[in-house]
Image (spheres, rainbow, N blue to C red):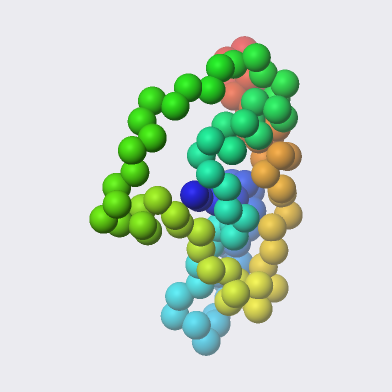
Length: 105
């Protein structure tokens, strides 16, 4: 389980944090919308209307470290100082796909 933030949101958040002072020593950056890697692959396939096959090569999870399996940042402090996600996951997928296609061409 992970979360994904569009790179433009990440850049905006980091620029905001660098250019302002806050009482907090640590403020997490990212998204708090959890999604499994498999569900992300399915979402990408659906959003891009892809015929690609989703193959799971290794579904063995390390039992000794649940943080490696599940990481979604707590964004309470980020929201308290006014940060927000501007680009949703679906739009981020479309933007990234477009960038990749532009590089290829």
